[in-house]
Amino acid sequence: ASLDLERAGLGPDARIAVVGTPCEIQGIRALQARAWGRGASRVDAVVLTIALLCTKSFDYRRLMLEDLRDARGLDLARVGKVDVVHGRLRVEDLEHRVVVDEPVKSFHGAALKGCDECADFLGRAADLAVGSVGSPDGWSSVLVRTSAGMAALERAAAGLELAEIERPDALEKLDRLDKRVAAGSLQRALDPDGAMFIDFTEHVCSYDGSDRAPVWRGW
Image (cartoon, rainbow, N blue to C red; front, top):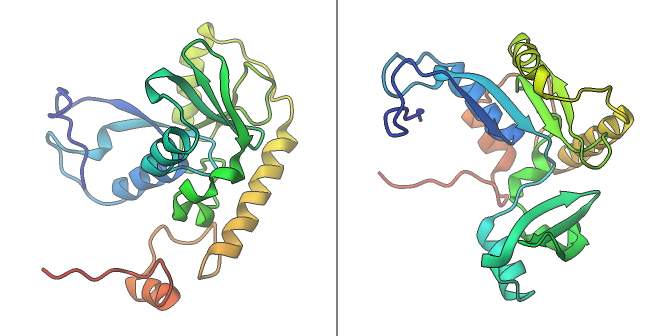
């Protein structure tokens, strides 16, 4: 795996920021933990990572095509925003009218299976983590995790309105819930402070016979 800077029209010395879910940021950190040479494809070009606070992500086909378009009759060309707020999945049209407002558990079948095993709601591997939890409507909670994250926030501060997070306990509560779900879903012991990588044999022993068992493919 690599970061194709050339395909994006960037030079070999580009410095870029990546915004993604916590698991995507973890993937970048895993790639950065290995030795990658300089050139058009190099993941060390990522100098800032921003994680979006996340407990669940969805398969596009299952959520948008099957659940929203087919089951609920939504015209996807008229969808302006899809969001999960306070445990509810909300869809707004292009005129900002709410056209779907249902408990997110109603769409559990569209969620990616690996999400239940993830215990990184707070985006601990990122330089900055951002989300709506803990802040009033119209505001975002920003968690600074590294010196690179602090430097980025300070450079942008003149264009921001900053205040203390209003409800940090809400972040902590959802983080604890996320860990409980992960502990109950993992086929091996949850160790948030463990090594980034696990041995393939350990993975096979933990997941053999489950729906997450490794799939062997012929060469």
